[in-house]
Image (cartoon, rainbow, N blue to C red):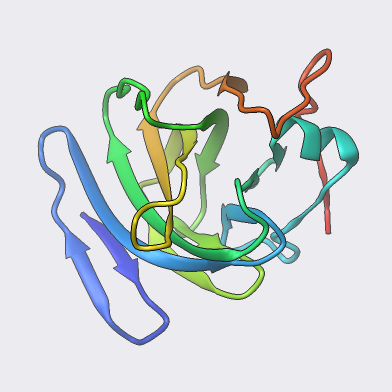
Length: 177
């Protein structure tokens, strides 16, 4: 069972099916980033170096942040938790994958600087994929966040748009902000 706990004291329960659980919500993004982190981190946001900006993500154990296509605005987040990998959406403009390990009390957050959505996710090792899409007809920026159980997750910029400038190896560590 995946429990999504919204700030408005509302609770939504999604029962595990044989293959996946999913939900969606909106998140107002500021400063061009969506962060996913363990709720137990004292300083959950990452300090971004220019190389992080160029590659579209910053990462450290327990905290991953993805650079959005727009600096600010309403983002429609679709969250999926899968047992098996899913094919990358053909419509996604930018796609990045990083390792993510859920430990401790199993509470994580999906956040921007302005707000945070806490949720519970089974303890374990995941491949965390962020798929970013062009603005939709309602003025939202769709983002698909996919956690897939994985024994050997890797860092990978699966699809880069012209907003990224990747040169050399990916920078796979960051400091707390």
